[in-house]
Amino acid sequence: MKINLTTTIFKDEKKETVETVEQFSNDHGVEMKVVNLYPEVEYQTFDGFGAAITEAAGYTYSLMSKENKKKIVDAYFGENGIRYNMVRTHIDSCDFSLGQYEAMDDPTDTDLKTFSLDRDEKYIIPLLKHAEKIADNNLQVMLSPWSPPSFMKTNEQRVQGGALKPEYRQFWADYICKYIKEYRQKGFKVNMITIQNEPDATQTWDSCVYTAEQEKEFLKDYLYPTLLKNDLDDIQVNIWDHNKERMYERATAMIDEVTDKMIHGVAFHWYTGDHFEAIQLVRDMFPKKKLIHTEGCVEYSRLSDAGQLENAQMYAHDIIGNINAGMNAFIDWNLILNKQGGPNHVGNYCDAPIMCDTDNDTVKENLSFTYIGHFSRYIQPGAIRIASTKYSDKIEVVSLKNPDKTITIVLLNRSNEELPVSVRINGKITSFNVTAQSILTGVITE
Image 1: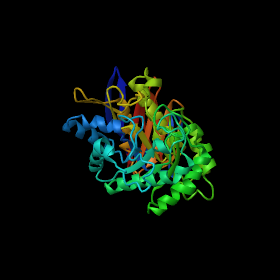
Image 2: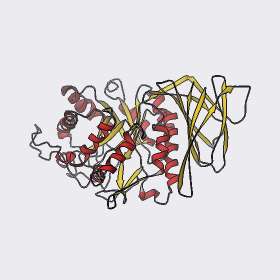
Image 3: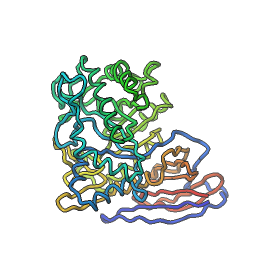
Image 4: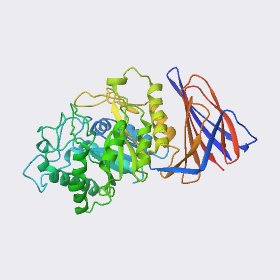
């Protein structure tokens, strides 16, 4: 038995990735500096990784040369890239759009005859098609609304929160189903939706507020019956789609004997901190539900002073903590952005793992891209998290058993000291060092 090790370090603003191989030998009672793996103790299944194809990402992509378009999509979705298998995109406009827009804005058009995806066709769909092709037609697609059309809102506008008018709940359910069906007709495997992005936030951009009672009533009495009516019973509906710290409250308020069959999972974001215990609470209370991270990014408004290493470590720390707490999938925010961190119609700029200089046609892979790849390249869709123990809080560990029987272990060392590790599994042991300020992925094979 052996372990193939891939280590990435970042020093003096330079990245270095080193690959080595270590052999296992019989365990003769090593007790110190140990990380234990227990493949027989299984937890949740992990479905994969992905990112959002926003209009901002699609517009940025459209300005790049043919060669760089291919480079970007290969890097994310190709076999030699970081192997994303999921995409999230928005129903109508979001903050990372060029401006506000709606597929239909006529209150009298209850048959949705004027409904059009022309705006999506311009920037989102070309990038999505390219990703689908490179991923060998194996992408799962999630749709999320930031706001219903303005005429359906209590404040008569897409921005500044507001709520869905009760008299438009059926119209909005029909609209969402129309969006799903139109995307499916274009050949995309839309199999997931969230009911509302950040339903507890009033934003200067596209937003809409739902209480737990309102979200539950909309799902139970309007959205779910309309999905069934449109033969969309295979759509996986995810609730909440907001920060972790309140996901338990929303889940317990919405999931009951009636709605249990309607709710596939709970979606969450990372913007208010770790809250890994919140994920664990939902996992313990609702063991059959999917728990999906649907958005996270390095916001310039809060984290502009952070360096590449800190940003990358933030991703790794969150992914490890989330998986260990019960997460089933991790979807990042924007796939790519321009050098400003946009475009964004309200100036809400942020970082992305790949940034593009559209003026000079150059592509920059941030360290966060490499760190995410330490998970997504080696954790296969369908992998099962297994139990592990560690000897120190200076090292963060997660391990999964892949469908091909290999075992992936990721170790994050955010300390300034090199940490020795002896990995023990099934009566075998191997030892190596985890470099200071590094991430290491090991793949164990027979």
